[in-house]
Image (cartoon, one colour):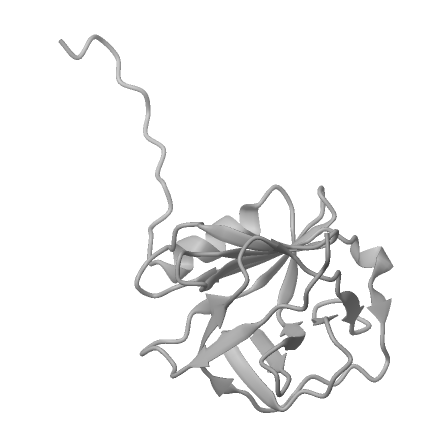
Length: 185
């Protein structure tokens, strides 16, 4: 099966920028990059996959989640890791659902709390921000060149990601109550 470089469509930004954050799952040695939308959670519809990376998308091609299964000990550390300093907020849509994409090269800073996924060698002509803590660099042909992710934290058993999602959606923590005694009838 041939691999492709992801193609995207850039639309005017939505009213509110989606929330994005990186969570390195220590027990799985995988990086999870969820995107949460102010209007609520989107439903999974399709994907773009490589051997090490998966983009989960909704029916309209909006990004829901990125999973990187390459352990961070195998990420390439760069001393001169310099993310783009500017990016325009946009509504980014992913095309070519259910395709096998080329596995990106994964670079990171020395602290490993920022990562860059490099998909192509071509020059980027546009820096866009599809969500907080995510920047996509796009080539002239609307192909994805890189994805930058920031503010990555270590997570054990999904605790950090669950707390972040509750905070994003304004949900209160679940309070446990003492079990009832007796029959409800």
